[in-house]
Image 1 (cartoon, rainbow, N blue to C red):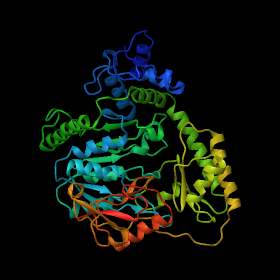
Image 2 (image 1 turned 30 degrees about the vertical axis):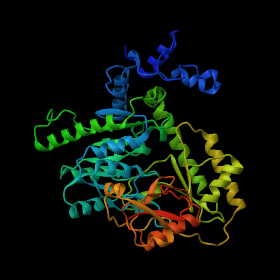
Image 3 (image 1 turned 30 degrees about the horizontal axis):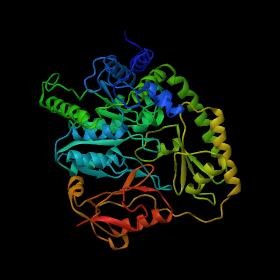
Image 4 (image 1 turned 135 degrees about the vertical axis):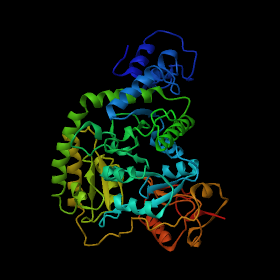
Length: 493
């Protein structure tokens, strides 16, 4: 029998049977004896019993659930990811061959570096168009990709991050047309756009615009547990070499598909979490049944409250006007970016005030902005609470006439060593002030969103040193360096 939620239903059916659990996991379903709150979770936490299928050789309920996901998202094949988008990005990068050149926007997530190390690929970094006022990278122009293809031979794949962390979307269709002429697959980090297929007024999903593969971070916008993600594949990824590909280009794509599946199984745990998979199962069913209705409500609330936020003196709420900037064709209405340049407080201070005085945790607080991520489950009361809090803070901290520093956009990079070469090279720790013109041995990424301003193998220029000093001065949280205070840094010997 096929259920709308095959994994979840099978877990429930199994747990309702009285029985002695003499198998993994070690809590044996008895975690309630230790923690009442974790007890209900433990009841669903089973292992790969016969009726629950095999994650790496799915032929039962997991296979059914992945087929339902593919249908819902418009994919040829869907593969569940239980350790976030990172595994999907790594697997797609490893579907290429060693030494392959891969075009990647510089506003991509830090996980790309790990995938490049594993794959042995050579990144062709390209700049993202930035908001001139806020200094944040938002999208990549099709022309920028065309220039990269002209100046780099043997490009094996092109990546986009769309939507960006801030909700801005690239012209995926135009990029795909450019690449189709050259038979280069387009892969999209669509981590923040898993909800796009479920409402026609939201940005178009990348698969619909011709992407070969997309990685969706379901936990970012769906009602699922953290770590839940999905790798959604389009037609270019046939798994069986030559099966539907009589020409040489099809054969190449088929081989890429074989490598992708090998990498997927290599990178994915052999002990998958059934609560996570059940969460994906339930959420996909919910999105199919209720997604459009909930997204419509969110769309209307977003339009209303962005207008109201823009009436608050000293703040500005960004949205559709971003489509006037180069490379941006759409904006996710669930991302609410509020610039605070007209107030006495910085974005970081605004975030702290919201947390401490109003009990509101925003997604990110940067020197010049805060960003709230609303979900399709938030209601009018939630939007109103956020609006009222911002309005009250704006009244308490009007502008003092002091212009905030603008140095948030990382300076240009200069790659000296490939990611794999840099990863394997011996390293030494030096004082940051004395690292001028040395080669970085570690990553520095602002977190969130996890976008690196410096990668291993890159030159530590004067501009980079100035930028790192700015991040420290503005108390921006970073990931990557062994010294998070940025007093010292690893360099390559």
